[in-house]
Image (cartoon, rainbow, N blue to C red; front, side, top):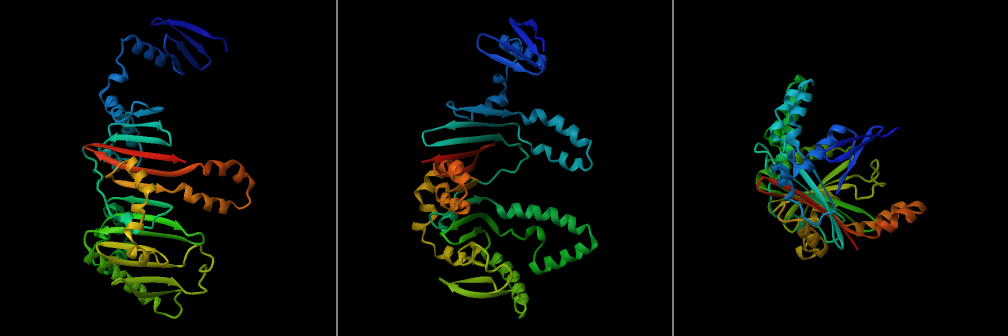
Length: 388
């Protein structure tokens, strides 16, 4: 292409093909649109307002550390008219248009480097109509063993699932056959479908590996232990009826663990797939001390008897990582990358490509953690990748 040049605002704009650029005393400006390049030069000349003076941009930048590697900013408020125009042309777009008042004003983020970790941060200013996430500390991690490979914790999981069930209920109620089935389900539950988990507050899920088998389970805090227990017993009673036949592929049994009844639903020996699973082919469930325990194998019994001093909540690596990411919080994700490395190597077997090109990087990793926090109407997420 033959370059063309144009003088503008004390600089020379050079265009080559579809790309234009200008060099000032401090910056190299590049754009596929000449008009945008001229706007940048006007900003530098002080004749056009700068983004740096914009109030929403300043609010986003205030959430970031000064010593960052890079950052990004998105004005969702500016995009709102464009989104409205697109939705107005789509069938069923009116329902989504009603949700636009929950769009945040902006989203911003950054990357930062420290001696032993990288930090990825993002923040947003929540709309006044948006539901504020709950921020609080829990004892859920104290029911998982130290050395848990993967752990995630979230707030208000019961309300979140019930909101999804409410949408499902509307669809089921619109069909005559589905509506009849819905009525039967709600009669068995003793409540409406959109309140099926209203007794659950927060929940955590963890995955462990003992070198031979995988163990996984959920621990949830309850706001109504008695009501939740009754609802679970109703469901377990139905399973016992189904499992009572000789041809049923599973059994339902009860056992006492420290004064708590633990119900185990186990596949019978010889049932399809029972011998090839990388975990015990059973699910255990219990309700005790305002907590719900649900997991594979004997997870519920172990979680009830877990010593807090030997739990994940007392693991120095977990505690240090979560504190660095932010606490109290609205949720946690934690991965013991160093603990997972041997499992990944075992899964790779004799794969030379993994051992040459992947394993050296994996072995340099320690942990990954991410938390979500809320300060006023600013919601933030911080993720940290620790290395050895």
